[in-house]
Amino acid sequence: MPPPDHQRLALAMEAARFDLWETDPVAGTITRQTSRNFAELGYIEHRITIPMDEFFAIVHRDDLAALKAALDAHVAGACERFCCEYRMRTKDGAWIWYASRGKIIDGDAALPGRRF
Image (cartoon, rainbow, N blue to C red; front, side, top):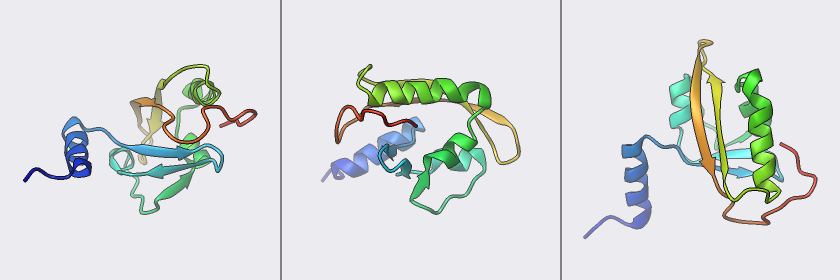
C-alpha cells in the first residue's frame, strides 16, 4: 500500500531540499512546517510560530525592501504568486541566498492596508 499523500509530499520535499512555510499576514507570523532553512542557517528553532520581524531581522538590509514589496504585492492581489530572491544571515554571520516562492491558498486574496 502506498504512503498517504501527506507522507509522499514530505518525501518529495525532502528529496528536492524544499522547505514549507505558512504565513499569517494578519497576525504577522510565520508558521514553520519544516525547519530546513533554520537548520541551514545554524539556528535551532523549536517554536512553531515566529514573528515576521524576527525573520526580517536576518534578511540582508539591501534585500529587505524588495522582499517586503513582493510580499505586499502578492497579498494585495497585484500578482498571482509571491516570488523573491534574497540573502539571509547565518548564525555565524555569513550570507546565504534564498529563492522563495508562494501563493495564498486560504483566506482573503487581498488585505487592504496590511504591511509586512
